[in-house]
Length: 105
Image (tube, rainbow, N blue to C red; front, side):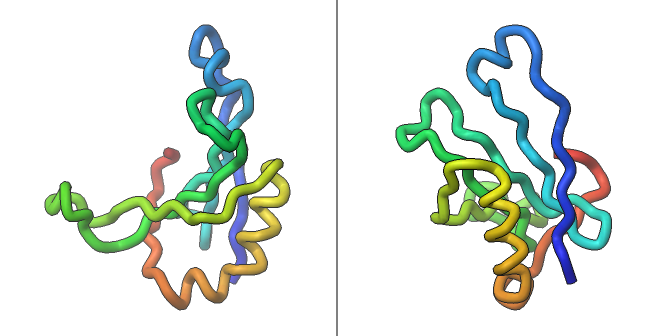
């Protein structure tokens, strides 16, 4: 099993001021399971992060069948996050039941 990646379109206008870098969708078996997010202007560390959709309702939203899990690992650039995900695919899929969506994030 292997993650694949797809860059999202570049933001324009005022949205591009806060997020000049492009986020990347994380896919498994052709379906979206998460995102690699660039640092937001309000982030203190200015580094990229990985977020995955995991089966199981969040405590504050019991009607939604999945929740976000944000990993503690932070990265200076997006390719490093891709490499980290590929190295951890077995551990991640063994620990979490990923929610697979056909819709982009």
